[in-house]
Image (cartoon, rainbow over all chains, first blue to last red; front, side, top):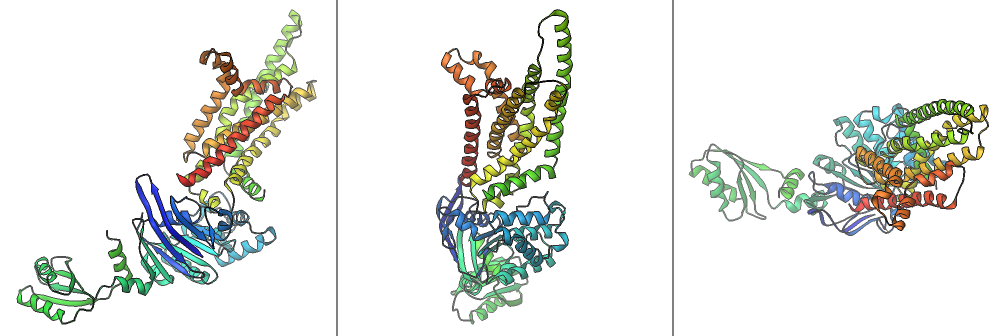
Length: 307
Length: 254
């Protein structure tokens, strides 16, 4: 449904995308994760034909966006990070305009507009000027514009950005309702959002794809071993250096003067924890706690993007 | 065709949802009114003088020509005000992604936006017909001159709008679009007078004079429609619409 192969894009000397490839199957919701400036919007702009790639292909429902743009765009709905709203227009007029622009047959336009207004609960503001609406309503009008022609593929760039918690929950519910009928690529830097909403994840950092797969794949893949937090009375830095030398210890980092983050290597015998405790006690560091920390997507994300 | 008219109608309506449309109407009609009033006064004085000193004096055609020639000058401000926002404003507020991600070609977008501007100016021109109608009611002007003058003005406006749309497609700053369009149009207006200073070669002088708008408009104002003038305005319009299309397309690669 969405197929991206080897995309590269430079802005002057800045490498915005470097050999980006991923695939979104029909009916899936895929979360596109990355920090600000990682290349999410550039990828989405290329996918929707707003920007040209220096190298690589982007296909929507089998149609190449550069070679067959009209056919590809006919199957596409795009909500950019800043909704493309004509603030001087009324909500009704704007959605009708978007429908016409996206070649909805004139006999169906009225029905489609009504359907989308009902679905996004825009009835109460339909005759108001878009410029006078709240941020949440503007976002929904932007979503209406992307959905009005009932596209096969939906590309949503940070759809919940700047919304209040209630509005975020509503948009998430809506996106979940849309899956199945639509193939959705959803970008975000809010991890809980993609964690709850998406079937698959693609993580991008500095223009490169650093991980992709299901949530469990990615969290498991980066989970080199269990993570523990060791709390001591004092001299955590010195102790961390000492623990680093243990065989089987993946990583030992002092987070502060009293706390150390321990990442054990894969398949390491848990008895290493006894050694850790013994060293702490023998060294007189004052053991205060040794706690198991389950790995979250957030940690994986930080690890993958910390470079 | 559907996409062109969809974009053109939206943009045309948008002129009247903002201050652009009403302001253009107000200023254009106001200035024509001032010229009309001023030249009628002048015309009457010249007629009186002619009676006393002999000779034919100024004709109604001379009066119309004087008014049309002055409108040419006012257009230097009106045309950039209309075209500056066509692409620049949308690029600035990211509205351009609406048509860039829609199944429409860049030529359809350019033509849609251009016809919206042309629609607005056509409406203004039709409204300004009130002044020649006054003349026709109270005097006996040559209808050919009135028609020729309006056709000339329409073609001039059509070409200037194409130029303005092109400038707007190259920037996201409306002020820059305004200034560059105005400067370009001013250059085309005064090129005719500058030619002797620029070059002494006959061929070069002829070529530069052909590029300037003034002479081409002048033959329309005299009530004569010549193929070379028609071709000039049509070519000018088509070339700058083509440039706009190229510029819009190239935005994807910038």
